[in-house]
Amino acid sequence: MLYFDIRAIESQAQPVHGTLPADDPIWEEGDPRPQPAVTVEGRLSVAGQGRFYFTGHLSGSTVVACRRCLTDVTAEVSDEFSALFAEPGLDDADEDDVYPLAANARTIDLRSAVREAWLLAVPAFVTCRDECRGLCPTCGADRNEVACGCGAGGSDARWDALRALRDTQA
Ligand SMILES: [Zn+2]
Ligand SMILES: [Zn+2]
Image (cartoon, rainbow, N blue to C red; front, top):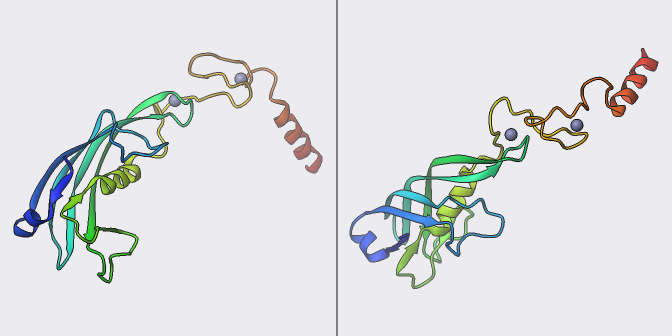
């Protein structure tokens, strides 16, 4: 549950213990989805007239492709994040890092803030293991599985061309 009653926040900072599941409609095409949900812990408090501040932590796991061999890898995601929500008409209500509230909003919906923090926290480059040998750039074989032979014996024709160039310049 990531909706919070503004009146309740105004009377007392509200603890946040919520989850954002992979099937929530807030996710967009292409987002790395959590498996099965992002867990959010923190608190929502008043940050001045018409402003509310969340600070806390998100965690979860997601499946991303190894950047070398494209195998699915489970990545653990964990990060601190904060978000400022503001009612319309305030000086900073339209700044980039402020989540605008509707004019008569009674609740704060944390989902967009959680989604954006999650997207920033998911690692962009993951390898399945340090020694992953990746795919052969010549034939596409997974070099963790097979020795395709492209590198051994005869060398890649493209390198021959470079070598010839280097030899003529030497
Ligand atoms: Zn790999
Ligand atoms: Zn190869």
